[in-house]
Length: 112
Ligand code: SF4
Image: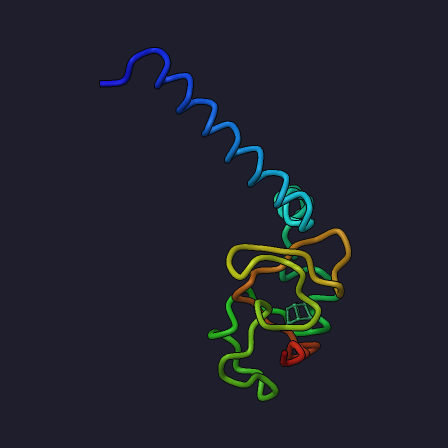
């Protein structure tokens, strides 16, 4: 069983760890990127740029002959989000694309 001093120590350790994780995330610029992606509207299929670029929310559903198996927003050079969910794409300022999506502007991320 924990006594009051152990509870205080546990709480203090939790706060230290939480503060460290938050500071690290802020330092890496992760938090603003996630916060930005959450607040961004998703690109819709009716978006003029999305239409022009044949954007799809799920790369596995496209029949576009330019699509190569495995190509998706998550591994595109223009994608700036997390590996899953939605994130910003340089092609659609102020909007988020699906990490599973794809469009004809797909550019593979540089190796390394
Ligand atoms: S440019 Fe890349 S990240 Fe943006 S929608 Fe097209 S495939 Fe996805």
